[in-house]
Length: 223
Image 1 (cartoon, one colour):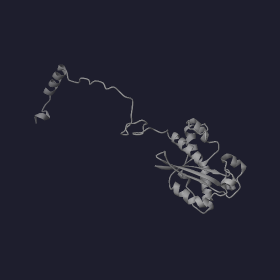
Image 2 (cartoon, one colour):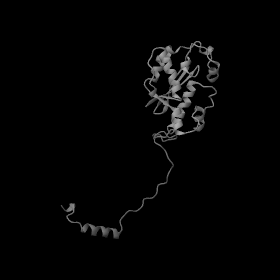
Image 3 (cartoon, helix red, strand yellow):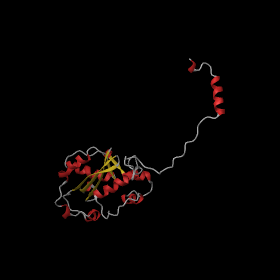
Image 4 (cartoon, one colour):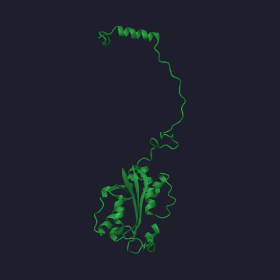
């Protein structure tokens, strides 16, 4: 099963107010495990970066000036995500920005049903607790010390770990236990074999069995 963990950084909070995507980070999962396959794009928003947004992700006008516009990277983005489900923290935000960018260049929107919202998953699993990415990293003891600023690829990596924990955590499977045998089998605690226990029938048991057999009418072995 292929899934894409996705995050974006933007110039603001609302595409309806003209704000744009400036960074896209995607990580591929297979059966909920990262494959190492990733896509990381910076995007020129063709608008000045508000200071409030720059303080969140650190991306300023000078850095983004020579980056491609969204229409120049859209095919690369769509090819990477293909038709896979999209794992997103606060999916309505990122899907709203992605679909606004697609609409701006005359492309079809991504169906919102493709998104798996990890905020909703966290709120169902931990009602009343904070569902922020930082809070979930703390809950699951995921190291997020590198997250001094928001970054699409960094946050996608943290979200991939959080998502696996929300699903129940990584379960050790056959052949995946650290320190396993050369043949790939799982290893366990060494056990001392017990001596075999005697199971021969006693004289009383043999007599009882003979009496039982003698009472059978037309046994099949006499046919």
